[in-house]
Image (cartoon, rainbow, N blue to C red; front, side, top):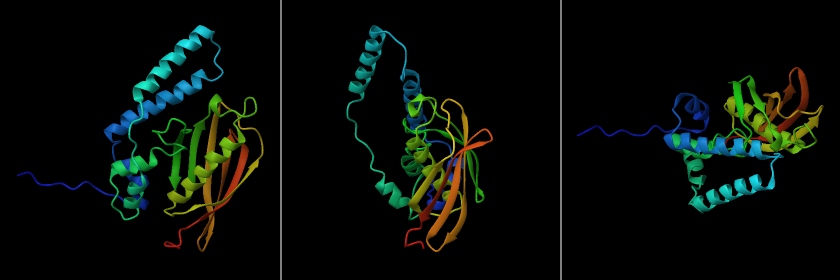
Length: 225
């Protein structure tokens, strides 16, 4: 009789180590492929110059794919979230929660992707490139998209410091335009903590120029405060 093995489980402060040390589950390799293909298609087709016949052909193919996919069942991640906070989440649970994050989630086709180059208790830094689907004013990233991304970046700094909390306030100051289709850098770090309040600041840079400054307060759940 073979020895029974128990799948390794994780708690909320083991997310980063699990992502860096454990292989991507096989199904998420495919989910990420699907997501990457949809993102690429979105970027290539927005404002595309094409004749009506070509557009009709593409639309027909995409509508056929939608019909083929149909309405499959979806997993509810709430149970996985509860397991995480009791230290019982499997690596599959972690991916079903985190890989669909609307910023950086590898399996989420609408998520701007961030290549994290530093994550530690002193802060985080990542590289990102935003295509035309995120444009607001011509040639610039939409301000709402900037805010959306920085909420996630500042939260990432909190998690990298092994703390938990939810966004209480987020203030954005636009200092210059953040260009689309060019390399950008995002950074954030914790400034201080007062009781349940965690003060975090960060921003976005285009080269050496800071284009956006963000600061906010994250609130630790009362059960952890």
